[in-house]
Image 1 (cartoon, rainbow over the protein chains, first blue to last red):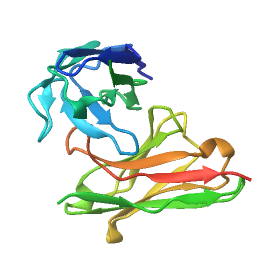
Image 2 (image 1 turned 60 degrees about the horizontal axis):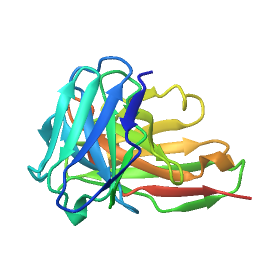
Image 3 (image 1 turned 180 degrees about the vertical axis):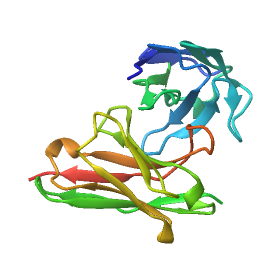
Image 4 (image 1 turned 30 degrees about the vertical axis):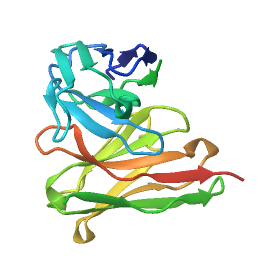
Amino acid sequence: EIVVTQSPATLSVSPGERATLSCRASQTVSSNLAWYQQKPGQAPRLLIYGASTRATGIPARLSGSGSGTEFTLTIRSLQSEDFAVYYCQQYNNWPWTFGQGTKVEIK
Amino acid sequence: EVQLVQSGAEVEKPGESLKISCKGSGYSFTSYWIGWVRQMPGKGLEYMGIIYPGDSDTRYSPSFQGQVTISADKSISTAYLQWSSLKASDTAMYYCARLYSGTYYVDYWGQGTLVTVSS
């Protein structure tokens, strides 16, 4: 099973600043990596798939990069609606696995 | 509009059986994998298993193999997750999810079903 590790666990950022979230896989997942956002009491929402392709309706201030085992989600100029928990997930090898999440909180 | 509508919250006692559902609409239900994802209170997301309703091909995560059963009834566009004997540790939110055709990221999520197991 591929282990996916996210860092940091919590990121404190001021509105308008940049947030950089990291995701590492224990073995290569090629570009088969997605990012999801989850807000309290809600189901997750797809942000990025294929490591760098934004899902429909996702603003350009969110971007994904990386391949192989190292991935990054960058959120430029954080808005109030961006404060949430973010999960990365590999779908290269079954069982698909999620990272443990990064909580982006208001500084 | 693609929708996955899950059954309502359940409160059960340990040892009881339970089957929750996920009804798909707005797309060809038999052409997309459906996954089930567990989220224990205050914790992260875990894949339990996936099913292809077109032929009922099913895969389980090793952690959940033998613990739950995933099934689907394509005639009513509904997938199911069931337990034969619930434990307190099964208390969690359970999400069904549609996997994008040809790849396996989740493009649509159900609203979640909260299962509480308590004596």
